[in-house]
Amino acid sequence: MDKFIKLRKLMEKACVDALLITKEINVTYLTGFLGQSSWLVVTGTKVFFITNSIYITQAKEEVKGCTLVEATQYIQSVVNVLKQEKVTSVGFEPSQMLYKEYEEFNKALKGITFGPVQGAVEEIRKYKSEEEAAIIKKAVEISEFALYKTMNFIYEGISEKDLAIELEYRMKKGGADGIAFPTIVASGFRGALPHGSASAKPIKKGELIVIDFGCVYKGYCSDLTRTVGLGIIPARLKSAYKVVYEAQQSAIKDIKSGAKLALIDKKARNTLKIKNLDKYFTHSTGHGIGMEVHEAPRLSMKSKESAGPGMIFTVEPGVYFPGEYGIRIENIAVVTEKGCEILGKDQKQLVII
Ligand SMILES: [Mn+2]
Image 1 (cartoon, rainbow, N blue to C red):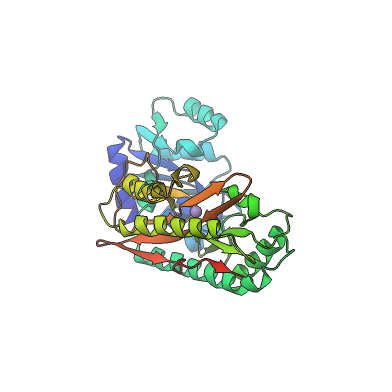
Image 2 (image 1 turned 90 degrees about the vertical axis):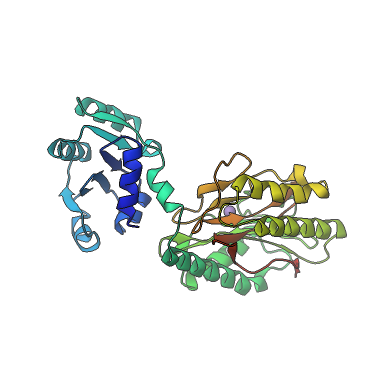
């Protein structure tokens, strides 16, 4: 179904006859426009693309099916469009509106209801098309191949930062448009920081290294985490790795259309609980991935949603022992009717270098 048909259904549900889209990624998703500083006004029958002189030529090339509006004052242009189209109620994206813009709109929109409509485009973005899934798959392949090439650079004494640079370079060299987020390389005790960005710490023998990395390819992100060991790894850490892997696999087994996301999260937690490791798993099991590295849906205890075909999310249980070490394994699941397709190689074996 056309994105705008879906969006208009959500507008109807929210009781607005127009929707103002100011989030850049949402503008790109709906129109294919790759520039910045552009807003959309979607009404029941039309889409107005509001941009400035810098982007107007690019917009003429990239944006089809919209009425282009060249603006000097964005808010005034939106107000003009709404009045011209006789709109009586307009929604905006509350997480994307500055307070001063909100005030200005409120003043200028006398007689027009102006209120928040949260996450409408995000709701549509949650379900990926086959084309989108293929792009994410490619982004995963680029990342995974880059790590494979970077394995030679894991040796005693290399800093986390240098290792991250090697990996990022290879992702770009392998076809990525950029990195999806600052690469995490967290070795030894730093591995206990779930989001420990690469530091100057040299990697030592006997340490586990958590590498969480991803790239952007054609506007879509990948996100993988691998835990590898350098030198002789204590048996205690090896068995914890095994449990984390089992937690990931048990969660993956439950993924299919209709499965409650909170139960998938719980499955990973319960598997860790058998070995008393659940208390060291301090974040949710996964998150949607697409144009943003973290997007809807969330796989957490609080999630009220169920998996649906086309949803793409990470499955990334981990355990973190403050001051000691951390382990996380992350792959990406593409939900199908009967189950899911896993992107990224199976991590059953702890790779030791
Ligand atoms: Mn992730």
